Length: 319
Image 1 (cartoon, rainbow, N blue to C red):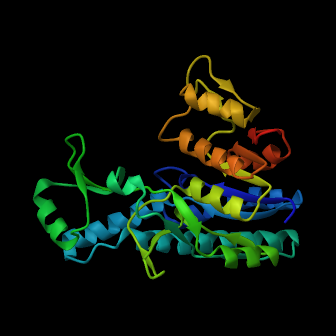
Image 2 (image 1 turned 30 degrees about the horizontal axis):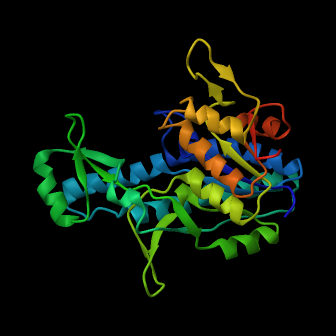
C-alpha cells in the first residue's frame, strides 16, 4: 500500500469544551475533523483512522455510577465501555466521512471495525494499576462497591475520596488485523483500534477474554501502522508543533527532528509524562519497527503538515 497513513485523533479533541459535551456537539467536532482528513486523502493518501475515547468512557462510567447509586443497577464493565465507545464514535466518524466523500465526489466508503487488542497477562502494569478512571467515592460507599465488584482496586486520592485505578498495559497484537488489511486493500477508509482497542487476554486454550484495562491509543495506533506497513503515522493533538521547554519563555517549536534527536530530548525531560511523552514514545516505537516518518500537529493544520508546511516531522534512522 503506497502513500498509506494511519491518523490518530485524540478523544479530547472531539469535545471542544465543557459547554459542548453532548453527543450532538461531538458530531459537529467530528465533521470539522473529517474535512481535514479528506484533505489528506485528496493529496493522494489512503488513510486509516484511530481515535481516543477517554472522556467518552468517563461519561458512560459516570452514568453507570449514578444509576448504581440511585437505582442499584450494575456498573458497566470498563471493557464494555471501550467497546461501546468504539461503536458510537466510529459510527459518527464513518457517517461524517461518507457524507464528505459524497460532497466532494470521491468514490470511497468508510467502515468501522470494532477492534480487540491482545495484551500480555504478565505485563508489569497489571501489578501496579495506576490509571485513574470514573468518579470519587466516599469511604461509606466502598464496601458496597467492592461486594459488587470484587476485582476493583480503589485508592485514596489526595483527600478527595477513593477512586478506581486500572492497568495500562502495552498492546501486543491487533486481533482483527487481517480483516482491517482486507478492507484497506479494497479502498475502504477503516476506523479501528478506537480508544486503544478492547483489551483482551489469550487463555492457554487460545480463547480470548476481555479485561478491564486501558490501552494507550497512540501505542495501539503505532502497532497497527507497523503491522500494515504504513508509510506515515500522523498523531493529531492540541498543539501545532512539538516544543522544547514547552510553556517557558525560551519555548522552541520544532519543524523536523530525527529519532536520535528525539531520544535526546526525552532524556532531557522536554516532554510531560501525562501529555506529550506517551505520544512521542509511540512514534519512536513506530519508527524503530519499520516506520519511515511520523507527524504531530493539530487537526486544522494536518494538510499543511503533510505538505511539510506545519507540524513537527520525526524521521526514522538514516532518513
